[in-house]
Length: 105
Image (cartoon, rainbow, N blue to C red; front, side, top):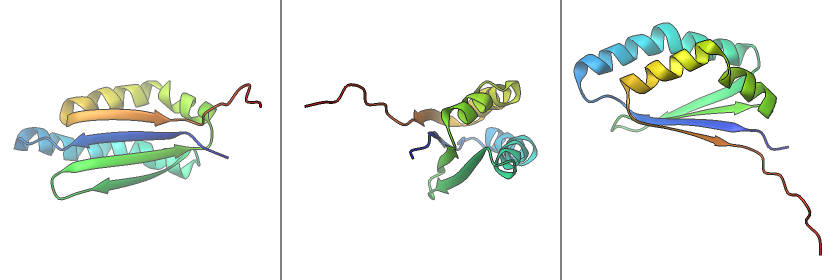
């Protein structure tokens, strides 16, 4: 069974002040929130980075309902807004299971 995957991709801020705020935000707010999601079994996550400061975070949910609950959570929305202000080139994607209707010969 295919599971929805949410991808968060961005570049670290180039100026030192924003980068320091980003590191503080990650440690104190973002990681506790997503670690709790993972501990509660809501999603699995992994992250990849290169030496240029480009980061890709991948969050795999069991189903679209689990993703929807997180997406509609006020705390998640607040964190995402703040995230976007601290990084450069923020992009998100939702890869969801496709539905095939009416395939026939």
